[in-house]
Length: 175
Image: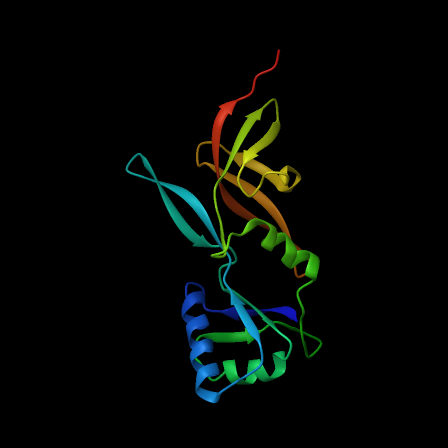
């Protein structure tokens, strides 16, 4: 089965997943499929205090895995909120397996990338725990004030910079 992307109205990703499931049930679609809206935990500051929030990783997109994308697309388009299935030269555009595996390496069973814990010092990031551990090379920037790591993902042939939650447990200093 291959993965594909559906462009939807931003903020309606989970609603569209529900609509697709509803349409699939109505028509008795029996092929195997899976829907995924990858999310990320972030910390946001409100009135001087940090709160944990969950945000969509790729706003405006739902990922779908299917071995019969043409039939699934016909069923899904009967629901509300789908703008289009991503296509290239008139064919449904498959997501490169390497690209989707990068997402699956980081998400938990609920499809969420949890916050990581890191030490930063002398321009070096060392992730000590969390999903980014072992993937320090993906980190492009650390914003210690906002508690976010900017991570580069390759998706559909393009680099996408995504902010992920990161806690700085200490600053490593070497003389």
